[in-house]
Image (cartoon, rainbow, N blue to C red; front, side, top):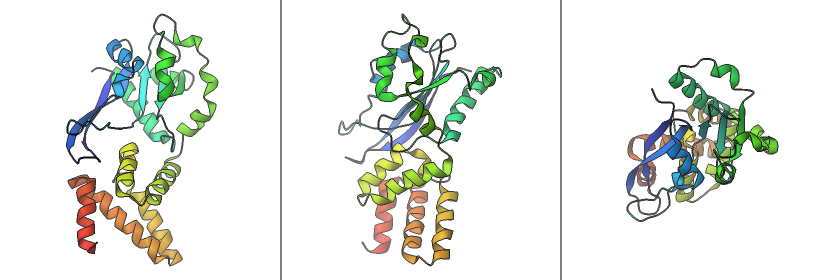
Length: 240
């Protein structure tokens, strides 16, 4: 089984509404897929556009670059514009998937001492002379704050991302939040939303309780028919 892995999902363009398949690489083994490392270096790996209207598609997920013969061995690339760090379970999930694919359990012992973080916007520059100049020559300790942000607890992650979601009155902007932070789609976010629902119920805050219930319903329905259709369905039900 190859170490490199990509995610394929349906993306609804917020500009024209066309649905297209989007392929997003999550794990790249540098020795296994050197062509993809070149795509990272020239940034074409993130050059995805809607076939219907040409609008750029932003599908932001963590990226783990695996360099078996270099340091750092495990390089995590973060989103270009940080709203919230990826939750620890998401980062660790990529690493666990790499261990499973490789069949090398010894990687677990290397994880803590052989990893580093970098912003996606800096990644091409850091890799521009690779493999001629080894990665170990770069000071990866330049990102201590990013490292702390990346290891966000799941509840903190949902709190930050969903605050951004609820503060945006525009449905297009809300859709962008769900694209940038795919974990806010149920079922992952359901326990967090239900906890907020219970808290507002205990406080007697009926307005916020209704907002939570409405959006839990929209996000749940969006898994079946897409985000925009779920919003339209909700608006029709509410007579909006």
